[in-house]
Image 1 (cartoon, one colour):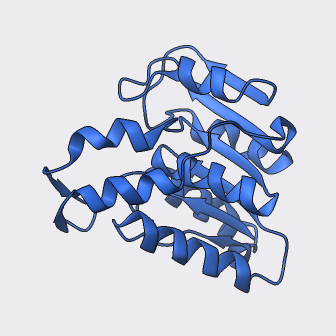
Image 2: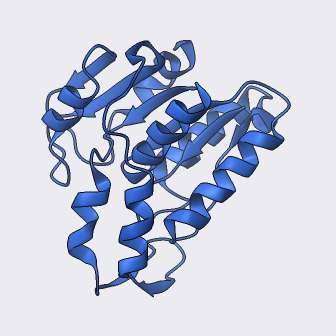
Length: 185
């Protein structure tokens, strides 16, 4: 199973999630691809991901984008899984702490919620100080990401296979071009 983990305030309707799902479906592999809509609460999101991993009858590989990369890193470390990280949020527990007290809105569903102290505390529980086996990771980053500094990810995932492309954006604009490399990894 390939488990795609979307980013903050995103969903299974994100461009990358749809592109990857279409790629699998067009090849008759649709059942091997899973992209759940995650709850906004980190503990509930992680429980859903843990349940999917536990229920899988095949080996699980992870793809995480932005906040999904933060979640994928924790899951990879806990379960010894391989993970592809697309413009991942490194130290997301610290970055999102500034959002406490702010209303958030899911880009696809329109659902609104207040990002609370509880959200921030739950994120803290999933922080990984340092990865233990870099060979389990593939980092895909674009230098034009205006949301996250790609250099943080490059340093954090030192020793991992890395593809760092000039330009681009936070959505990793060349994602489709890298689907074969993702699957080869």
